[in-house]
Length: 291
Image (cartoon, rainbow, N blue to C red):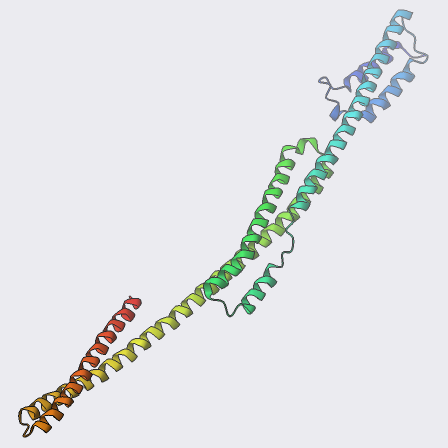
């Protein structure tokens, strides 16, 4: 027969295993229930000074066990609720991660088709044809980034309400989608720069071709002007000679013929001067284009 003091020690030990703040999340449940068995067994054969003291000790023991038992059941329910809520949040975050994954728009193939099949287009039209798909890609990636951000915010705001395993799965899904989006943003920037470079190259090439054509026109006009000036000088000299002949004409018939030649030369000289004025205007206009 054991002494009742051993029972009281076991009860005290059992009490000490219950957190004073009733924070049962860190309680050693197995240790408590092992001690409960030891305490219960210590009652057997123990002699108390009186029946009242034995009943008091037993009731205290039972109350402690019942309180802890109720708390454990409550904790189990809370854990189940957290488990369900964690699973719900995990699925929500996974849905964000899945919806945020960029789809294959076939942008690279589409741009290749436009570039190779659009040789007949001007640089501006070709650039606009390429920019359409690029703008669609940009809008798609912005939408994906916004959905991904919602996933990260949901994970950050609810991390205390989720189990470690669920948080790990959610984080990994978001990270994989983030890497896909970053990769697509990188490809988009490269493709946009390539389109811009091609546009600039086509523009520069087209401008250089145009410039060479204008310069060639100017040279042709200048050569034409020089020839007309020579012809004009020749005709003006000839006209002077005709006027001398007119003054020295020995007969009316010859004077009449010389007068006809003079009218022809004066008409030709007038036409040449008109042509020279036009050529000067064209040379000025072409040079003005190059300024």
